[in-house]
Image (cartoon, rainbow, N blue to C red; front, side, top):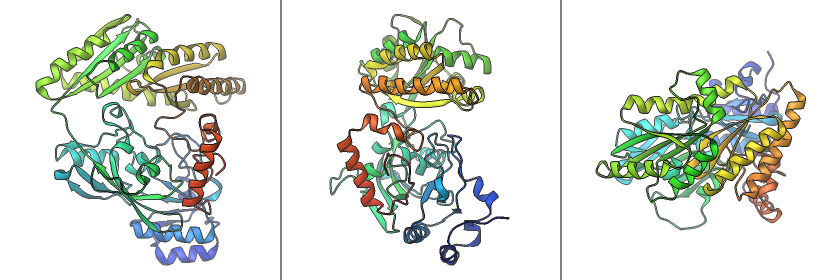
Length: 464
């Protein structure tokens, strides 16, 4: 069986610092750690499974000394190739850094290691009457480290914010193995620069996070879920603007277009009527004393021209059934088009109608099926181009469509990614959004943090 191609002095030093079960050398073992949900794959030269921050420090110090690239990986649910170990990189897997270190309800704080899953955090917080707002669809398996790496948020970001809004501080390890601490244990603090928000979303290109101090939020007393159906996408898009213009901010505001509804009807039992061309799922939460009035305000604002019905789910079973439809969509799309192109663009809420209308034109122009869904309340629309990877003509049309999609998003004052990150897939498009002066500053920041360029090279920014 073949072994890692790394220099023997490096391997010898690692064997002195790690147990045998913490170093995966055989090719078959390494191969299964070489992918993420982008379906890209590259076999790492070595997989290391540290169980302490000190081991992370030792690993990075050695890789820095030998100029060996390192890619950090959680459970690989990301969709942009950020966790794929290019060019024989060492793969640092955080699955054994999986401890909840501290729960402090009095200060609304939880301290965790990066390998803890989002679901484990939610369960531990709920036992004390709290939750952590970021809740990606993959919450059952995605790790906190991965959430922080790409600032992945989920539906509740609309009201409660993203990881950048819900993390007080970090402990991390620099490229040369030095421990560093950012932020504070308090919700207010302006000492120094805000390196916490810089590291969150940096996709492991600046440092490796080993600990996060999470800001918890009390669970709402009550919540109600509504489903609003519309004759067409344009009507639903206009309703989003109306909902977000009134004083009650929904906890979530999710959107699915007609193509998405058609796929759900085919794959799952549902009561969705055939005439429904778009759907909004709305969750309103808060004080039990005020919730009925808040729900009535949101429902009234959702009942715009083109609305077919606004249904209030009045039992836990009905609520669960509504969310099951939303969570079934991504797996259904993977089944229909395993090589689909999935973009998570964001535009100002008022521009959602223009975005949707533009996407419909692009789908017709390039003869590409486009399915849209996502977090409409903050303008974060997941645009899915369903393509056959074996059809070279269709792939060429999809590439042309993608370029026009990005141009449309930027014209509407939007951004190319809301929460999936950049990774490898979107790296070459970054310069379309970021001007040359700003991009150069970012490249210099990368060089300062990682002078030898060993941390997740080839990802996040062009030219690094």
